[in-house]
Amino acid sequence: MARYTGPVCRLCRREKVKLFLKGARCTTEKCSLSRRTYAPGEHGQSRVKLSNYGLQLREKQKVKRMYGILEKQFRRYFHIASKSKGVTGKILLQLLERRLDNVILKSGFGVSHAQARQIVRHNFVYVNSRRVNIPSFSVKSGDIINIKTKDTGIKYVRDNIELTKDRMQAGWLEINKENLEIKISRLPEKEDIQQPIQEQLIVELYSK
Image (cartoon, rainbow, N blue to C red; front, side, top):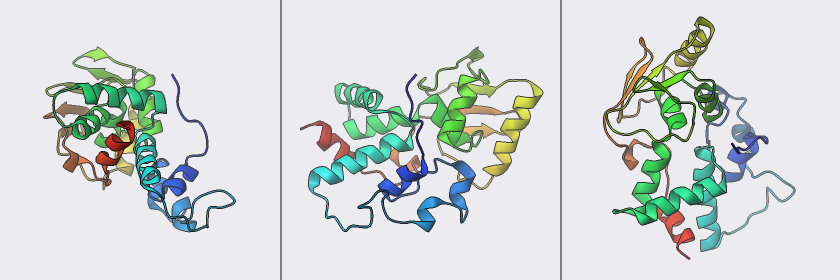
């Protein structure tokens, strides 16, 4: 299962926005973007005016990195969204938000996408009483998600809950932190995404 394994702080610097890829560290003074607000590389401090294509590309790259997926999978999500009835950009964001690893992250059971992905891959997660270890698994309205594991794993998840206790709760999730349970109360809307996304730029990029 392909994933990015390089330094993640340079991704935030490249997109010039906090993607919270390092979890709790991103909220401290150790955050790389807070210390170096320019893009990485030899020409990172150069002033470059982006073309329309450049703006579209940067938006697509930002969203890909927010959800921790690579180009092939992101393009597949767009293909599904474009073939579905409704607004393509809205459906694309819903598909990304409904990923199981994203739900674990938004619930506060993981502090970063990489950690949420690890929780899923290590067989901690059950959806409707069935074990699911596929991070890209798409949840639907009414699904019940539980964290079930041995004591060491439970402590690991509860430590994450303590670290993320101040995180804003997603409106489409009903979270029972005591029982480590999540209910999908409805499908996510764009307003539920805390970071600004201009999905129309992505649609324009792939529609060329």
